[in-house]
Length: 519
RNA sequence: GGCCCCAUCGUCUAACGGUUAGGACAUCAGGUUCUCAUCCUGAAAAUAGGGGUUCGAUUCCCCUUGGGGCUACCA
Image 1 (cartoon, protein in one colour):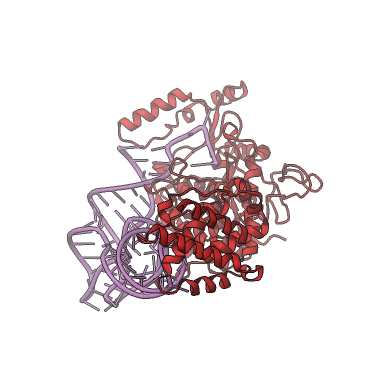
Image 2: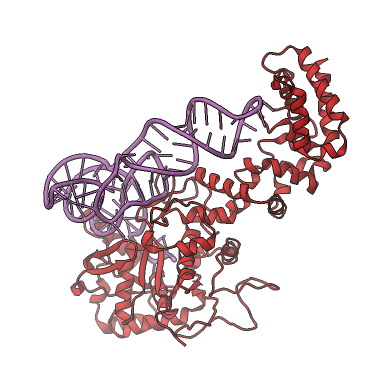
C-alpha cells in the first residue's frame, strides 16, 4: 500500500546527550508539517559515531519528545510496562533487511542496528565505480589540507588512492589494510543545484565538493551515507533540518544521483542563536529541553515560543499565543525565516507567564506538585501548615499573576513560607509616621481582624471591604503597617490577600510580633 | 584561508513595488482603592552602506560591509 506522494518527515538526532532546544524546534517544524498535511512524523536515531554515544541518551530524547507532546508516529515504541522504552520485543525486532520501509513498520530506527544495509549499498557504489577505497593516513590527509589552505584552495581530498592500480587496491582491501570508502565526485558533473523550500535555489560548484567519506575504517557508515540511504528506504518526502546541514546537501544530492534515487525536498530552517548571534550553545545558557521543563517552563509555552523563532503565520497576523493544534493549522514552510533567531529568555518568561496566568488554580497546583516544585522551592523548608494543598492553592491564586516560571513560587514572596519574619522595624512606619501612630494602626488592625469570624476570614473580598472601611481616607496609615507586619517586606501583594492566605491565627501572630517590636 | 547562507526597532517579527514602516518582548513615563505585581495609556526605538531597475523601492538586481554556518574516518 505504498503511496509515494505521502508526506513523510523525520527527526534524526544523534544520541549524544539530552534533547537540545534547537533539536526540539527542528522536531517541532517536522511535526507541524507532518500533521498539517496528514503525513507521518518519524524518529530515527543516528548513532553511527560510536565514540560519541551517551548511554541513556536515546531514552532521554524519546522522553523529552513525549513530554513536549511531539510523539513520533514511527520509529519508537513507548512502552508502559517494561524497560527501555524504545523496543517492543513482542512484535518488532530491529530490521535487518535492505528493503523499502513501508508505512506500518514501526522501527525502532536505530542506525547502528542497520550496518549491513549501509554496507550493502556502499558495495554497490564500489561495484559501479561511483565510490572507491582510500588508504591514506590521517597524517597525509592533514598535509594535503594544509597545503591547500596555504594556496588558498578549497580543502578536499586529492583522489590519490583513485590513481592506484585496480589490482593494487583490490590486493590492499583483501589483505585487510585499513581503509575508508569515498564517493568519487566527478568535476565534469557541473554545478549541483537544488530548490530549498526555505531558501530557494542553492547552487554549488562540483569542484568545491570533497570526495566524502561514506564508510569509516571501523566499518560504520558516516552520517552522509546512512542519512541518504535511510531517507530513501524510509521514503522520506521532505528533509526538514537545521541550516548547519546546508553545506552537506550537495554531497547528499550526488549520492542520490549515484544510486539513481528520487530525491526528497529539502528545507533548511534557520539556526537558533545565542545573544551574541553565534549558534545556540551551552555556556551561554541552558539548552536542554529537560532543564527548561524542570525550571517550570510549561511545555505549551516552550513549544509556542520556539515555533515563533523563525516562523510566523504571515497574513499580517499579530497572534502570539498558539496552541499546538493552532500551530498545526497555521504552519507553513513558506513563512519560515531565512535568518537565524536569537533565543530571548525574557520573551520566553513573558510567554510562560501568560500561560501560567491562564491556568486555573487547580491545574497550577497539579503542575507544581507533580513537577517536583514542592521539594525544590522555598516550600520545602516551610512549616507543615504552609505546605497543605489548601494553603498552597491560596498562595497560587495570589502568585499566579506574578510567576514567570513554576520554580519562582515563593521566590518574590518568601513570607508565604516563612515561620519567622525578619525585617527592619523602621519599615513599619508609613511615610515618616511616628511610632505611636504605627502602633495605634497595628493595634486597630489586630482588633478588627481578631473580631472577624471564620466565614469573614474565608473570603479575601470581605477582608478587603472591612479593612478598607476602617482605613478611611489615609489608607496608607493603616494598610502599610499591616502589610509590613504580615510580610516583613517592602513590596508584596495587598494586606487583604496576605491575611487571607495566612489565615487568622498566623496573621494575628505576625501582628502581635510587630506591635512588640514597637514597644 | 575556501565554500555556502543571511541582513527591518536592543530582541522576535509584519509589510510578498505605493503604509505616517505595524505588532510583541524588554526599556522609560503616566494612570489604576497603601507597596509590589497584574491591568490600561503613552514615549523612545529599525529598513547596514553604495549603486542600479522602476513613475515609485524595506520589497527586484549588483557591489561593499557586517554576521553566521560548514570546512573530520562528528553528527
